[in-house]
Image (cartoon, rainbow, N blue to C red; front, top):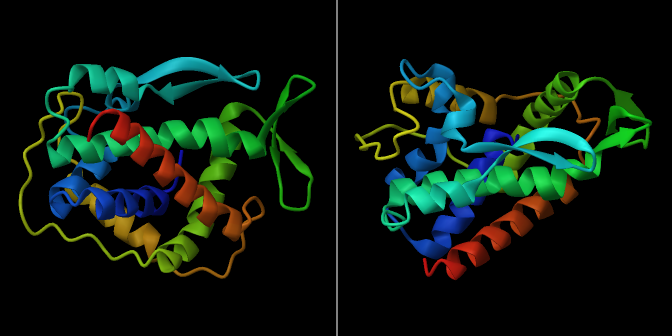
Amino acid sequence: MPASAIHMSVANIINKKLKRPSFEFTIGNIAPDCWRHSLLHNDKHLSHFSTDTEINGIKMKIENYEKFIEKYKNKLDDPFVLGYLTHLMTDNYWKKNVIIRYQKLIDGEIALKTLDNNYIFGNIETIKEYLHINNEIATINISSHFNLKPITLDSQVKCIVEEIDLSGLIKSVEHINKVNFKKTDEKSIIYNMEDLYQDIIDCSSYILKELENLSI
């Protein structure tokens, strides 16, 4: 799963091109991850339209944004819905094109490739935790490189996606602002930052092309 700073960076690049109402687009982009703090909709796989798949022999859940498009095809012009779709597309792209560079199946075991070309072995949950830790370490560099700003909740947005509610929005934003601008001297053992910056650009280009195909 991409770090929140990756989601925000991609979302900013997308909306710089689309020029939709920024606040609604941003909240829509955050919304799928509000399941963590939601009072009613706390099912990540529901909010992310997850389906089972296998990539490089590793079974995982992946965000099926085509299902989202099919359900909300008449509302794709809404900035909240478009921000939500951008989040799902980012997750999907990241798992198919970025994580596979680091996550391998070696002799039947899941392994995570490090910068020094060694491997960390573990089950899928252990690998997810290593990726999560390294995402958070990389986040401050991403926030600086893409000039991210803290999110402020200065108005209300109507949630028109049935798979989530915004009862957890305040806590989600507090978490994002804390993580994105947390200082650390630690270095990622997984990511080369220049590669990661380019991944964000490439992901954004992919999404813009997909949206163009949808006449958005």
